[in-house]
Length: 143
Ligand SMILES: Nc1ncnc2c1ncn2[C@@H]1O[C@H](COP(=O)(O)OP(=O)(O)OP(=O)(O)O)[C@@H](O)[C@H]1O
Ligand SMILES: [Mg+2]
Image (cartoon, rainbow, N blue to C red):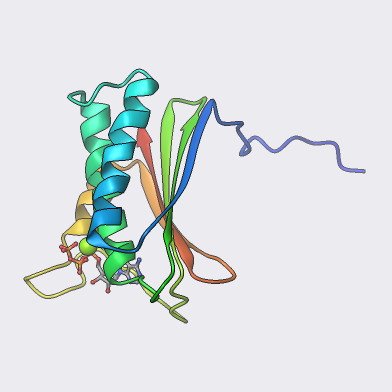
């Protein structure tokens, strides 16, 4: 029997999980609800932590409702307050692009800035494939 506890598993101090409509309105709501939740966790709307989280959520939600949208399906937002002083943001969509490569700055001049911003603001970020669709996640330092 393996009784080792993985050091990678940390139990969140707080969690918000939502499903929102895959529309511009849903994306705006994701940002607004993030502000409220961070305020409740002690990071008011005008703090650097809240502003960074707002930018990250706004970009990931915008991507979910444009590039990741599947007709009639919601997207998911999850915020996790981790004990090591990290806010983890997860945005899930239903589009299961086979072999998808999400690369910051990969688009022509008009686009491709959203994930560059995410990469600058987040300590780490990445994409996890799910059974249907994927989760784009980012981890932000809380200090
Ligand atoms: N959720 C997603 N599903 C599918 N493809 C995605 C997703 N998020 C990003 N991508 C791909 O990665 C590219 C880069 O994303 P990024 O947000 O940086 O730029 P953009 O959305 O094209 O433009 P901008 O964010 O500057 O308006 C996108 O153009 C798209 O091809
Ligand atoms: Mg984008």
